[in-house]
Image (cartoon, rainbow, N blue to C red; front, side):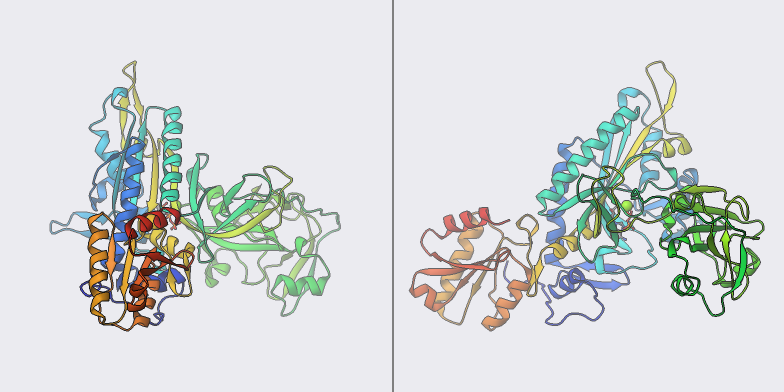
Amino acid sequence: MRMSKLYLPTLKEDPAEAEVTSHKLMLRAGLMRKHSSGIYSYLPLGYRIIKKIEKITRKHMDNSGAQEVLLPVMQTSEIWKDSKRWDKFGPLMIKFLDRKNREYCLGPTHEEVVTDLVRDEVRSYKDLPLNLYQIQTKVRDEIRPRFGVMRGREFIMKDAYSLDVDYQGLDKSYQAMYDAYERIFAECGLEAVAVEADTGAMGGKDSHEFMVLADSGEDEIAFCSHCDYAANVERATSDKVEIDFEVDSNFEKIHTPEIKTIDQLVEYLEVPAAKMIKAVALVADGEAVLALVSGEDELNEIKLINYLQANELRAAEEEEFEELFNSVPGFIGPVNLGEVRVVADKRLQNMSGAVVGANEIDYHFKDVKTGRDFEVEAFTDLRSVKEGENCSKCESGKLNIKDGIEVGHIFKLGTKYSENMGANYLDENGKAQPIVMGSYGIGITRLVAAAIEQNNDQYGIKWPKAIAPYQVIILPLGNDRLVQEKSEEIYQSLKDQGWEVLIDDRQERAGVKFNDSELIGIPLRLTIGSRSLENGVVEAMIRSTNEKLEIKLDNLEAKVKELFAEIS
Ligand code: ATP
Ligand code: MG
């Protein structure tokens, strides 16, 4: 491809709208342009990268035995009502009416479509197992679209759905996907790690996320320093022990004027933060819930949602403190609260001598005790783990917490969809059984951003060679006719041998050409100038290391092949 013809609008400056490196570089390197919030057009270079990732993904999906299909983007509301997710997805789903006033949505995911597809077709155990996958645009009206394609409202996903007769079959299908995912990410040149993931309100079944470690990642992952334990902080546990509450005197009300934070209270009352109870007022599916954690801990809302089996959980609004809790913001506590569900973290199991808000402005209770002064419906794990805590798996390692980008997610669904939607098969005895399902996603466009987060420097992108838009870029410098001719000759011969080659044949200064080639991150650059021609050499630069070396003009192709094989 000739750079003079290529639609490649590069930018010199970082666009103001972009916060993270990958977003900046995707715009600057002319890979994409924004259409609307979270919605992008992919330009020629960007789309080539996407197609490479798709090709690698297809190869490993096909090798695993999965079969590619293409499912509708526009989906009827009926199937979503059958699965009971029409309301649950809420505003994340773009919903609309067609001209006959029938309700539709733009698919945020395809469990429903697949279950609907097979419920009328798969009749017997002989038709299973199956794994159907597709690579297609998904639409999710995210609350906070950001970081470019990392969290878009329209993005490309590879999604797969396994269908088995039983859980043993599901375990096999799941493992096959786990293995395929490891191969896909490795071949793309990405370092991705599988971590235990939250399974949502359904609970119990396996789920892993594949994470690319990067500071810009929106997820936090806890890793053990000693064993292989790795889990999303949404679900990670540590062996943090119960708090030792030794005091057992009667509770008293104390005046705490202008004191609203835990730190202020610790100083004022000289009671350690662990015994200051943090009470969080929440509304779960319309019901008031007070969650208690130790003052030194953070409430983990995912753990609470899972315990409550709630669809929606939100912080109480200011007026709801009065209406639902009969309390006031800043001083809420579990004593004399009335009809409110109170759930506490298990570290608070034997709470006594604790400090809580008195549900009255400027007052707290001290020396409160559960069972005597208030009741708790359950003590369960509700806190987020912290850096340095002991691992709950091996008990000799410490947890480290790192940021990660979720590039893939695999999930044992079980029979939730097949039961809700009536997707059964007949077993060997002719008895109807629900199909056992799994679902498996890879964020193809998010992966482009993740690859850049992992591979860049101050000059631009350093594409891993497997997903680079082109393999080699040729830079003829100056107006020397011999340089032009030789460059064209090299360009043609490399192309003829099957290399993916760019030639910067623009009438630009050397500096511009160098900068652009580094920005777009082509793995191997060959620079040709009149002086190098006189010496019978070209200068090669390997973008991943920025290492430069001279290679002889004769036998150039063989040397390119050799160099390319060495780079990652
Ligand atoms: P997240 O927790 O990041 O919102 P998710 O768990 O909702 O993602 P899944 O339903 O598991 O996402 O989708 C499968 C994959 O699709 C994710 O692992 C991610 O790589 C990708 N993905 C999900 N949402 C987006 C988005 N808004 N923009 C780009 N990629 C996305
Ligand atoms: Mg996910």
